[in-house]
Image (cartoon, rainbow, N blue to C red; front, side, top):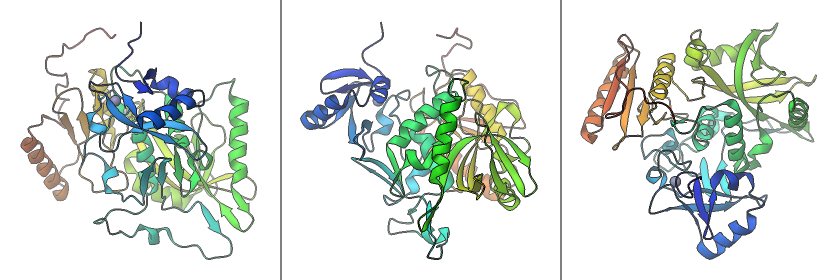
Amino acid sequence: MAPTTGPGHVQLAGRTVQLAWLREHSNQAAPLFARARAEVGNAWCLCRRPALRLVIRCTRAGRYHVAGWPGDGDQHDPSCPFHKLGPGLSGRDRYSTQAIRETDDGASIRLATPLTSSLTQPETHDAAQEETGEEAGARRSVGLLGLLHWLWEQAHLNVSHPQAGRLTWRKCHARLHQQLRETTVNGQDMDEVLYVVPPFTAAAADANAAALDTFRARLGRHGMSERRALILGQIKEVAPTPYGVAYRLAHQRTPLYARAALHTRATGSYRHALGKTATEHGAATVALFVVERSPKGHLIAVDLAVMLTTGTYIPADSSYEVVMADALAACRRAFIKPLRYDTADAVLPDFVLTDVTPAAYVEVYGIHGRETYDRRKAEKREHYQREGSRLIEWDVAQPLPALARPGQRGSRPHA
Ligand SMILES: [Zn+2]
């Protein structure tokens, strides 16, 4: 019999339900949500005792969902979908409430890239919106990489847990889609302006093609404005064309075209994700594109952010981190990959191990001789020592260190 409490279970108006069921049947559960909101004011997460409060939200479209209580993320069990790393362990901390806002309706994102441009007025440059505000240097808008990392973090795709099973693109798509339905970007519903490439099956091929056509029809000139949108998918291949490149995506036949200059810039900015070694060790490359429609109806990428991940979509900053993440998963460790968002110089641990208390950290040292980099690593090391946290270090010139949890037997049969 399935347990009635524990991670993945919530209590709503006195009833215990599985979160997965609730997410799939939010319409059916609407009366329960409404009662819980009116009579209790919140839902409860049953991952720990005592139970933890959850926010009940209702989108403008009238869709209910539950979300983690602000600031409570690190109190949830690490395997709970509402678990979040504590302060200082995510690039998310750097944004003002103008950039990322969570309200009773859901989350709203202010993206630095405009998705609609007026054909009557000259376009304002993106960088103009990147000014910093009164919240002590907090960013007032979110860049493309920031949005990609935010979505990954919200969908818990940067979390590896031995009980969770292998992450596939199908699971990524389902979780991301759930998140899109609860979010607006620049005032528009995110599930309308962001297309996550659906997993391919022969049975779904026609429906997927129709969905892409609907999405494409939204793009381009409508009245006096030109519409862009976002596509999130896995890059399978970058093929040269007479004008630049074609990004071929996994699970989708239709490629995205881009000018050579954009691809050259992206290769410089996302060296590890688009470089020659990216596909080693079974790694994957996930990208968020800003797309336009060409006069002939082709999808044209005009900007992109790229993220290197393991074969199971755990983000990694280098191919060495891919090796480390896979090794941690093979040792059945529970861990989280902290994400830097748009802040290139954010000092975050490479991985956080959540199956020990206090959490332990993993650092992968791949670059030598860069003074600022070495100094920052030394500072981090001191910081962990002060905190009394265990630190596992791997200098990539050496073999991998022992990664098993203290007291854990090396090769227990899997559950
Ligand atoms: Zn929980």
